[in-house]
Length: 409
Ligand SMILES: Cc1ncc(COP(=O)(O)O)c(C=O)c1O
Image 1 (cartoon, rainbow, N blue to C red):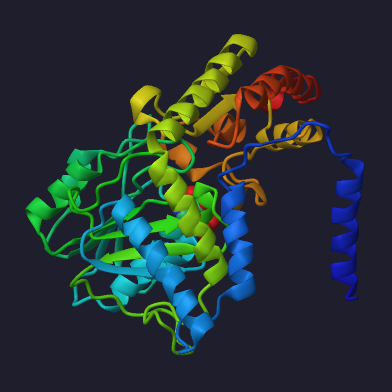
Image 2 (image 1 turned 135 degrees about the horizontal axis):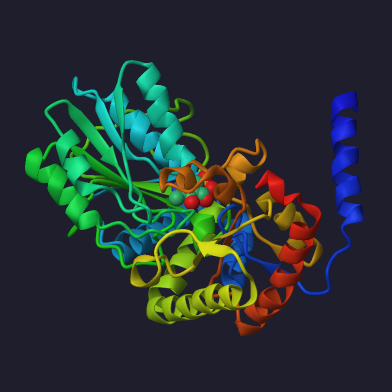
């Protein structure tokens, strides 16, 4: 084996073996990787056994096509998307890239792109890439809870604007944006401007009515709704021109060539069905678990703050808290030793130890951003999980505070 690979593998193995598995585990890092519904997993396994490639004319091929069509029907009805095309990708990241880069490629000359200052990196980075290619990128500021400044947005929409991309729900701090007002401001100025929303963190958590809100494109990700990883989707309203950004084999989908991940799409369809049928029940359950966790932390730990809004304007699953004098990365490791899996800021930034751009954009100081922990509850969690987390967090925080020099904060 190559020396660098062998060394890396050795390091990871020693981390795992130093970390004996806790008898109780609570997985709350649903931002970065999901739990999966048992029913979705069964669909996935069944599809691996029996489904073919949807572009091919034989029985397993038609079965695969059936999977795609069923998943499409489930998704577009759930979010009332209107007439258009649903493209299955392999992740939410790919869906966001296709939306932004694909629209820019098909642009008729308009070159201004507006995004909020707290977008997921899979929106932020492609938009920044386009800026390097001559497009004009404007980041719309947000307030201290993450709500987009609508006056600023209105002042930036002009004749050169190609698209506006604002996430329906922020992935880190759970802010639920007023999508309808956002699209109204944009469309009232010029109905040809395309409004895209990254709905990866909104699906299943907040009611979505894309047609009523006048949203032209929306991105989704399977693992955010307890479906398998490896599947995402982009909805594109009828009449919108998008150029492919990948080129390769012919497939049933013009805009995303390559073999579709049929097993993951089958699991996605099942999770969509479960979320649609149990929407109110799942929502109330998540809100109860979320609030028990937030209130319980405030009762038990000093010098802690909630990032993002409280109440109805916060995503039902989102708990993002900053523990002062406590480094977020150290706390994730300490909690991991206790079988509680969370993330600090977002995983994309944790490896390079940069504070989250979302927390900085809502005005949190560097040290508060560094002490933040992101936890997400789901319909698969229960009261006992939250009880265990609330027992462990105070001890874990005290331990990290004890060993970290306060002067650092
Ligand atoms: C809001 C948002 N957009 C996009 C993504 C990317 O989705 P994926 O992990 O499927 O690439 C995520 C990630 O989890 C997300 O939270």
